[in-house]
Length: 262
Image (cartoon, rainbow, N blue to C red; front, side, top):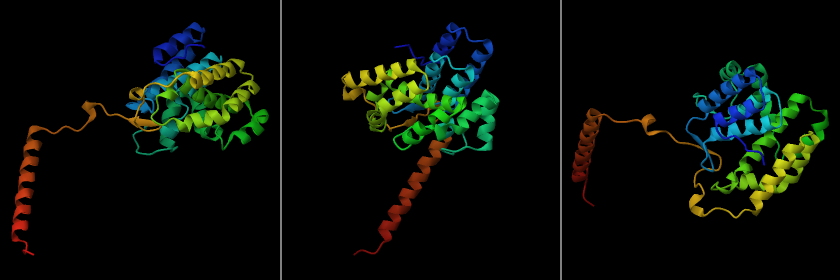
């Protein structure tokens, strides 16, 4: 099993060892920087920082010797679905969001991010994807590979065993695992097929961790704000709040005392 990067430095070193051009390294950094910003404070359902997942997807695509734009796309693949752009929207694509991704990673990468949702493989879409696979162009095939890498990344470190509720992943793999591997082979990616075969098998054979290590959070991603980002009350505000509570308490006492007795 190839070592899948989980940090930006591991990814950069992987790309350097592959002899990637400086322009590809710079693009990978810009994509990572934006991903780290959009997923700041976010964690997967297994407790792993979400940006580590996006780095892992980019790393898998790099191991497949795909172009630098595809690697960068891996780091940003679903930001329109679950990234935090600070606009309060979920699962949204807006001109402002597209502009931000385009400035950071270029038009080619942004176009793949924009279209990615239409090429995700699930039990509801696998028949369509398999039927259209031979007619897909190179860009569409790269998006399919990114989704396969997304599945794989959750398995390479046995992450699926640490979700409080991982059925939404494992059920899909139980049903589609063999078909996902077959899609990899049809896309002429035997390395990806072998990595998926090994990772899926290892997760099914490896005993699960003790319950204490399983995350009890959400199924997908959760946001954890650092203490410095949480609202803090100054001494004047705290004194004012105590006075207000006392006033409300006295008023309630008078109202209760004045109320007619049954």
